[in-house]
Length: 299
Image (cartoon, rainbow, N blue to C red; front, side, top):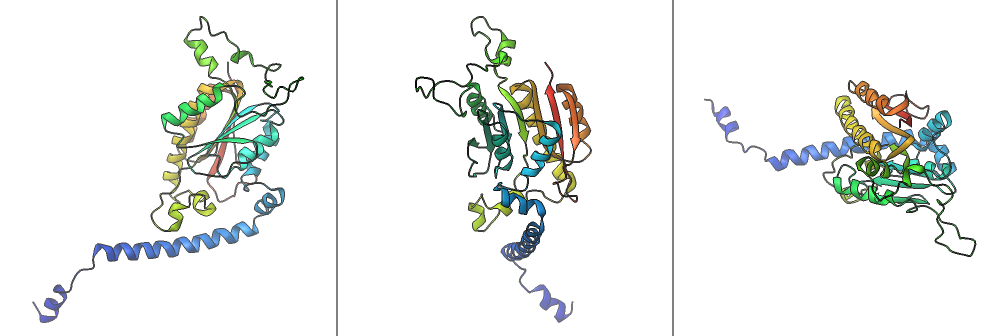
């Protein structure tokens, strides 16, 4: 062994902390560059500009507006559940289109300021205890719904007394298990715009979950991973919908295209009279996202 080789073998190896620091610095530079590109694209985007003009929470509102224009999802007085509601643009649209007596419940793992007139639950929708809380909330027909004064000034007069759904008026006495299931069906529309949030590793933004860039840019860039994750979330939303949707109710879910979406489409066709797959004009052409619309839940 030469003296030169011996000298090289005696040099201390870089520590794991060195590699970790170098990786985080490189990752931070890539992330910063990506953030600048995203911000530049947002500034040029026509739907982003229009959302700001109309006071909408984000450009995503136009996706739901375009779906509603085509399929007439909403009407006054409906109960709507918005899964993955943050920052609130879909809930904002739903609340506006179900006026004056509709109720909208948004659910998200991320803390966000809810739009006016929208009730929200912060928690992981996939957790059984959160789903139980959601069902408890929905079980009371007036909870989260605007009220109007009665003829004698009674502010607790129910808005549902003259518009009660037959499925929610089954007598409790002598009900069987099928009646129990029907009593859970208090929802007219289920919306799912859920995506798996990024894992946060370092920096101040780790404690600022409401930062728009970190919240909304939650795809990994790996098509298979994004597709598989979206299928899990869509299936969870569909199972929930099968329990809570009224006969004739509607379901909309975002998904990332891939090999498993045909199977999801077949499941939807088993529950709904009509199923449509579409990509709204406001969805960016380079995005792999698409939407399933299930219309009129079967009896």
